[in-house]
Amino acid sequence: MTLFRKIIILLTVAVSVFSMSILTNLSGIVLPFAKESMSLSLSQAGVLPFAFFIAYAFMSIPAGCIHEKRSARSMMMTAFAFTALVTLIFLLFPSYGVLLFTLFISGAMMAAVQVVINPLVRNVGGEEYFSFYLIFGQLVYGGGSIVSPLLFTSLVTGISSNRDTSTIINLIKKMTPPDLTWISIYWVCLLSCIVVFILLMTIKFPKMQKSSEDIIGGLNTFLLLLKDYKVWVFFFGIFFYAGVEQGVSNWMTKFLELYHGINPENEGAMVFSRFWLFLSIGGGLGIILIFLMDVKKLLGSFAVISMVLLALSLFGNRDIALFSFPLCGLFFAIMYPSILSLGMNTVLEHHGALSGILCTGICGAAVMALLIGFVADMIGLRLAMCMIFAGLLYVLFISFWAKPIIKNRKIF
Image (tube, rainbow, N blue to C red):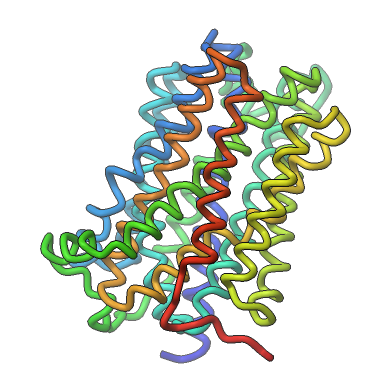
């Protein structure tokens, strides 16, 4: 495969990840607004991110099996087409039930994309640089997460304003119910899916020659992997990290509103955006550090710092919380790619099936988001969010326990 073709494929994956980021973080952005406009309890609001991320538990392994017979390109096209369709259904019939359906189907489709791109990137980019490409992907993912709350604030402000606005905002305003201005962000979601679908139609992926470690196989392959305790250790690593990231990103704006009186539409949305800005900066920093440090040491150090910042966020005053909540993103940035690369460089066979199993762990985001909402109704959101510390402790454990056979390439 030529260098030019590799670059084209990796850039296409980057655009897909950017769009996937906008989709993934919508539940966290709209959660406070859906709670108010649809008169939801904290538990009901917590079901919104749950509906999206629990789909990973149902779809990741089947997606791995489907990928054995279908190409990465066709699976990605199907995923973005279905996501566009269910998003349009919600925009036409906005309600709590339809929103849950939309989030679940979108989550299932994004799970399929996630499963497909992991072995694709490892194959195209090279196994020794897999950690680098995953952290770069996290940087792109963070970029989409920065853009989405800024677009949300711009759209809601423009639609709510009586002043003259742009033609695009005026068009969206006509198609958006006046009491549900927050759903306008889903028009952006719909557009991003269409753009990625068209891009995938125009770019031809070469046929990937799968090595024995990338071939998924049948049920016996999954059963073989599930008998390996190392697979379970890394599965729960992804499970707990996903719970940490989404536990903070989904609930911090509501936390700031409840305990510090911060408006989620303006300042709260900016804090959310800064969280993902720092996550992107952390991805850029990680790209440098991954060539200077062992990935295990990097992961452990960032887990400890994250615990300190989370404690300051939950128990500090208003100014400290506004500073430390977004800063958590800086140190979360390298966790998911580090755990995933450690897993795939420790278990050296059946990476297609392994990717499906590990990506199933992303459902931890669903469990944590729902659990925080349920517990918050009983003891308060501050104490409920303390459950996030358990996830960070497990990430710290991974950093000591992992023994990868293939280590990340360092300059020194």
